[in-house]
Image (cartoon, rainbow, N blue to C red):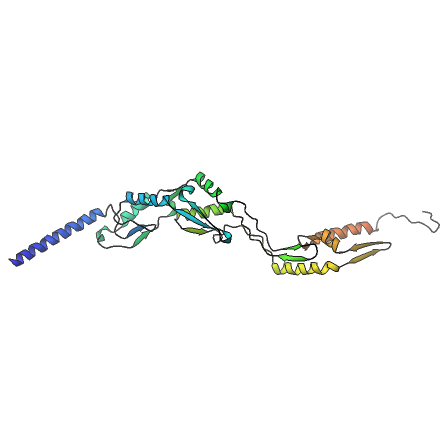
Length: 276
């Protein structure tokens, strides 16, 4: 009698287990398994429609932090960028590919929804970008350079500036938004326009040479006339952007040659009694 009761109970448990197992198979054909998440959002036991609704709600509060040069931080929200979710097909594929026959086993699977599942409204995005502080009053970069205070020459360090490559910056921000990233560093992403490279050591040598010219005075004697080259002439005629411009020196020498060279030119001679 007892054995019969035990067999009956075991039969009931087995039947119930099979029933629950097949119920589970049917349930998880339309619902995500326990431990499933999308973009870090827990989506266990939810349908595709419920997950889509959850993602859209989360997107309403989503904002991307923009780390700018010199430690600045700004943000652009999904609403400001006109970001919309179009990834229902991605959710359906994820549901289709889960193993429903092991529904009773919990999983730890976080699906990262690809960028192609999001769309940005270009008009709203352009307006949102235009309002960012980093897009306004940008300071142009400047390379290492020689400057003078009127007395000496010195090398000034490079100015990085804050001028952004607008098109590249837009693409970086768009990609980060579509990937649901929390922040993006514009400098590390190469969005800033750099100054033209100049060799600082070479400039320092040039500055030293220019400073040595402070007391330089060259006198060219052309008989009864003289031409003097001093620092004022050098700085006003030969120095260009803190460097001796070779072409300007050549031009000056050429002008000097035209002024004093008499070869092939008619000349007036006066005799001792002042006859021509």
